[in-house]
Image (cartoon, rainbow, N blue to C red; front, side, top):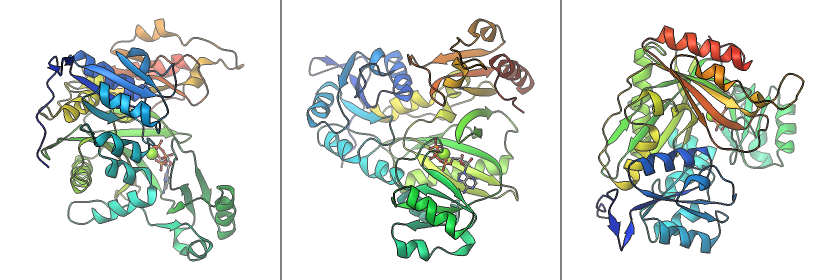
Length: 400
Ligand code: ATP
Ligand code: MG
């Protein structure tokens, strides 16, 4: 298919301002909307929630289910090109939109990322020559496959093939009996059993790939998870051994190329205690670990999403400051006795290099992503000093 011409910002198309659409109205959609609007586009958001973080800041908002044909048609009327921010958006809906408008990422790539089995098969295909392999694993969709699981995968982690996030839909299992019980408890849904690995650290890479196949990547992010949820991301010189960082970047570009991916893609990796790199999973969209790019890079992951969607030029982003990002979960909106509180924003904003981002969610719940706080500064030490003080002010577990 010929590459469509770029959708230039601030232009009129059929008498209406160039408009970018996004399926999903969460915080990722909200930051996409901010980036698109800053560049002069209008935006359209589709989300079932009338109070969605992105819907509330977009010029156009369509309140509809992700499968609602009329809602999708309205989005396609409003927006000249459409992206997604929500991993579990039905691939069929993206395919419907693609009938009339450019859609990035494509339904086929999103469908692979939605299914851990298909995702791991894709990683395995990319593992040779410059690629990185996933953990040893087996797919379980039947009693026969359950019985045939090799003993070497135990102790392991059983993960539902679909709809898992933030460590949900996972069970640690040490024996065959525990495995069978965990699969029962998951309603015998299709699952992947992965060998449990000894992790030294975790990292992720964000790439943006254009319609012409050109790919650029952000620097490698080092991530700390707590209770299965991203807690801290550090991006600065020395966050990872340089050879590992380049290996992860090259492997991520290979994964995107082999999918003929268009858009922003994040791939998560484990670094094992012996130093080996293992690929974990991918997200077909900007990622929580890339939020530091808003404040520490000359092009953010959301601007990259805008550029790939609109067919604009891609330049490799330059990080102009070391960065540490702290995720702000709803837990911080409660004191030790469980009473509601407002986190100490005034004291936090006194800290050098603090950049506060709140997503406009009205109700704080434990584990809910409410915002993030990124620190930038002249040196990694300065950034770390601010981040440590912030963690203490928030009552968060200390950072390294
Ligand atoms: P996300 O919110 O990133 O989508 P998720 O629920 O899809 O999370 P994973 O990223 O697969 O789940 O796992 C969550 C965390 O659990 C990982 O970041 C890692 O800390 C740990 N983990 C997952 N798989 C393994 C493994 N095979 N061995 C050891 N630890 C693991
Ligand atoms: Mg993960």
